[in-house]
Image (cartoon, rainbow over all chains, first blue to last red; front, side, top):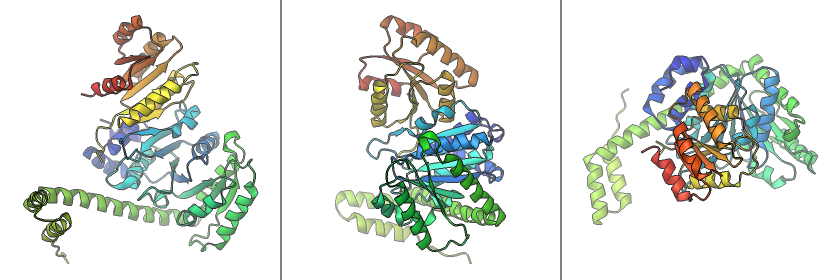
Length: 318
Length: 132
């Protein structure tokens, strides 16, 4: 069992095991997180999202190199999907970042999306709390943004980088609902391919057209070739300048409140569902209903309605 | 979906040998058996393998070795695992492993050996057996 004091001292073995407890939904994890939480809140959290194959992992690898030249401690959470068929997963993101594996100031952790009870955002948020409390200055979350239910990267990160590649006019269209609204920095990777400038232009136009953000940060568009570090130093600088911008304009506190509210909401949903379902499952009404369904006396719709209406009778305290 | 007791495996290729088709296919077979598999990529140093196993909190390190260096590599890695406190992590070795070396590997502390020709079924069963 990992010790709180070891995690706070930055022990990778303790931190990794703590994240494992979170993934395995171990009740101990919750108690430990409560004790770690007050120590978190200092890291700059970057979300990197974009379609499969645009080079997110390679770009993060290159970003790690840049942040390391500034001697910053960097952690990465790379999320890959769990197979809905077998429950297994191949976690291949860190493959592109392996040259940093032996660097003791870099911590890379793959997470499978699993069928997380509370949705992936909560497990990821929990892991961020651990890494933050361990003292990592930069935490990068990598995820395939689109198509992952309940994954709200905007409520997990200070700065969102959206990665795309040239020649995907349709791809940009495809991500524009939702994700485009949350992007702080847009990255046209593999920009040695044709039409990179056209992609940048399209993104610039879309940024011009979108509703001005409350924060007055103007989203930036950058070209990179992650594989040979081209444009990556500039990208790292832009991320850091976004962080500075947030600090100078008191946006960090605002963001923190927003993040805490969203964390609270997902916890509320989880804990309620967990308790309520357990209670219902064990109730006589539920057992009776199950028997009636298998006897063909009642249909599942009416049975579920009956049980819920009978058990969930609420009276407010105030 | 069940989230507890999922087996996490690191499939790692130490050293210079450059053939990873076998490692990748085994990774797929383990995925299909419901495990979470991290693949290290080629040409890993033992230090990289150790760090990866630590950060990923795996239950098993599965080495794929075709270079003939399975004995010294396994011996060194086991020593490093002990030194870094990965006591509850199992080491398995697969690849081109002569049969006469299997007892030597087991004696060192290798939990399972899967020489070339082992069926996927046997690999999955062998992995699961470690957690019964």
